[in-house]
Length: 354
Image 1 (cartoon, rainbow, N blue to C red):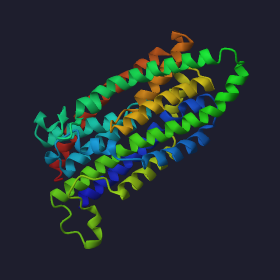
Image 2 (image 1 turned 180 degrees about the vertical axis):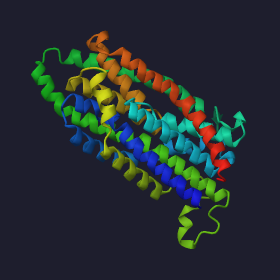
Image 3 (image 1 turned 30 degrees about the vertical axis):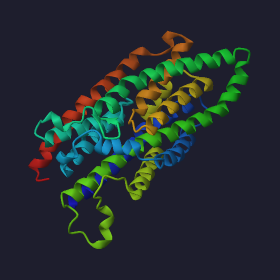
């Protein structure tokens, strides 16, 4: 029971970090275009994060039982996954790099599961089709979207921006800024909502996995009757987990993340409100669609590539590709680094008696 409480605490720490780490994803463009001040933008995003986080559990189910064999999962596995994601999230936040909290958690979970199974790769679900014909696993839910979603972001942002340019070619710059200064409030809200609907569910899935593991392994057998809400004979995401994660993410979002805001909103490409609207709308549509189908995409990847796509329509050199290269390296390293961390942390936790 003690280890479960530590797992729960680590999950909430991760959710809080996810909130302030990925805040920039939702609000960098609305800040860089000066539609809102950073404080107002953070408040705006936090509110929509909270609402989005309460909308469904499809992504949570994918994280909790769709990626690794739950028979090999212990509390130490879950703790190793969370600690690896927390370490990577704090490191990249300190460096000001917009890495993916989603992929950090997935990498940590896979590495920790491999460590628990003593290196047996069969513990990972690469691609599995259930009796209802639904395919889940690392390939359809993680790897393929990891490749496809940035491409959709880049080309979707470019196409939407080109469409807006064609529609607005007879408008004065002042009128365009006036219109999209207000429209960007809506797109930033939608971005915050979609971020909450996808990212908050990842921690919900991890906590639900810990509850399921604790129940099946008898960790909750001696609990008093009032604590029966912790027992879950089947994998489900209880309402109290949804509310707790939603509030924690909103609090983390309200905590801000100004290092990454500077990278995403100011250093990568210079934008006007219309560019911010195009990038946010593109990213929000992609993320919302992914949430509907239970796909845990990276908010960071999608909004960053949408910004790149929008910036490239001005002129290809408008995007600071040197900085983009640094960001891409952070993306590429996230899964293997967190996987190794998760693997090693499981062995460390075992040596400590966990």
